[in-house]
Image (cartoon, rainbow, N blue to C red):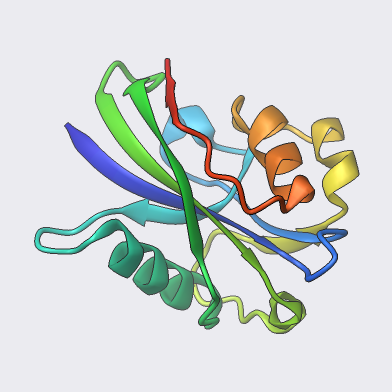
Length: 139
């Protein structure tokens, strides 16, 4: 099973969110997603989230683990994905470190863009900033 992390980096008031316009894998190409990637051998999900965020954005953020999704990706592979949220004004000072474009979006308008399907509820959950963990999402 492939294991991943994804993080949604919001401003302190949750009125802005930093997202990635994906170039790969093919089934995500052209769609928005959070910052993240694969958990490497020996890493905890929190370590992977911190590493992926720094590699992609140059930022070190106060990530909070909120839950786990499991199921089958659009490519037919089983996955487990740990979901993180951060609330920090430093998102406005990200660095474009890799080839997948980063941008700041109004989270209330994210549904107007092509997104990975689960962003339709993961971004609104982050906008609530309620400090409540959700349980487990299964596809």
